[in-house]
Length: 182
Image (cartoon, rainbow, N blue to C red):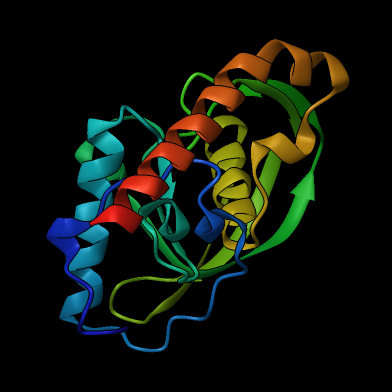
């Protein structure tokens, strides 16, 4: 983990920022800097009223995400270098994404999942989940491989979300121009 990362400067990145399409790199250092990044990510997730947040969504190409499917502090879970081991069943549900505000896509995902990951101390763990938590793990793992809910869109969904996606693209282009002028 780079010591040049300033956790308090992390913000949620919106589509079409290229960091959202990168395949993330493995986390190798489990240190205080990583702990601060994870704490900031939990804060951003809660503030955005989300249930999960992956590192690329805050501009970092690291294989980690945070999640909390209940909103209870005791259910905070950080998954570092996660691997989805098994998926079972299939359920289609509408999903949103903090990096794609106002976009909603029906996504078919496994109803049950088993994950292997590391905690902040560098200890490996395995867990199983069903329904919402299993879906969160799959959604956030997609981010670590550069996949977005846009990749699951049907033609009807593409049409329904066209305006919101165009607005995100226009906002990104405008903010890119501002950064170039500074």
